[in-house]
Image (cartoon, rainbow, N blue to C red; front, top):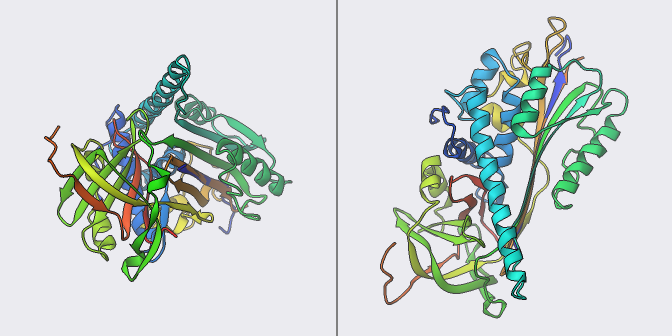
Length: 428
């Protein structure tokens, strides 16, 4: 079973005295949200995913949590966030509408899968449905004067209600409450998203997105067909790893320096995308050439008969801080660099020249498991804010051996949005 989880956390705190070119976001369509999601995913994968280690992100989770934060930004801070998040050209309503439409489409995927499973039961057959849970939540300091317009906006557009906390006197209790909420939303796949001591008495708001996915393949791989086969870990010498194989009609494209294959999940609306370099050591070159438009374009590949060899793999990484990477991309004033530059006045008013909100930390954590039955994955993101106080099939199938480092994505086909994006350099 393939399982995937993601958590994104953004922490905002109030300040005290010491302290690519993207497409326009006019879009009221999920395609615009998908383009922004894929673009930030590529940016962060390049910055955080070294070629010597497996890497996994949830662009969907990260973009959603930061889009909620963006709704409270103003001035230069807002402009910088729009550029980094690839949201230039769109106002709050347009951005929220694009994300709302994508969320609605994903909800429909789940509902359709549930109806199909119920229909199969009538004939005495079992058909495990897709499970896709997406949840947003604001955890805010009780008594802090957040602007009602901001709270209403994120609640109505991102289904993200406010839960009051007491960071001032009990930051450890607040940390446990948030981590427990994340664990519950990801079916315990994401544990301890926020490290101990990360929140303190100056924390004022934590914006969280959590994603859980459990998706069976449209057609399972036979467990009897899984055998040890060579895989060139990190582009070097080969070592045997458990490798699944099958011959079926899959999405397929042969492009310059790479092969792209898509494996559908049940219902055909989500897919597992494989981007395999031609060269054993070609991972970095392929990642350097990735674009949001390419990912969207690969959402609908022509089918071809493929003999596919794919290693089983599982990733469970520690919490990943994203603050430095986001700053390198140009989101600096949001982190109050230079001092007194953060502007989240649309989220909460400044009380004094040196009493205002800024992003202190961004945490991200993921899990994924791919096997013969399908995929299970989860992710979560938290933003912490604080203060200083149709092709004819050939007779012979094409053979694709995924036996060296490759890029992968879990993708919503209708929009092209990548719920998860990463690379495998060693499946062991």
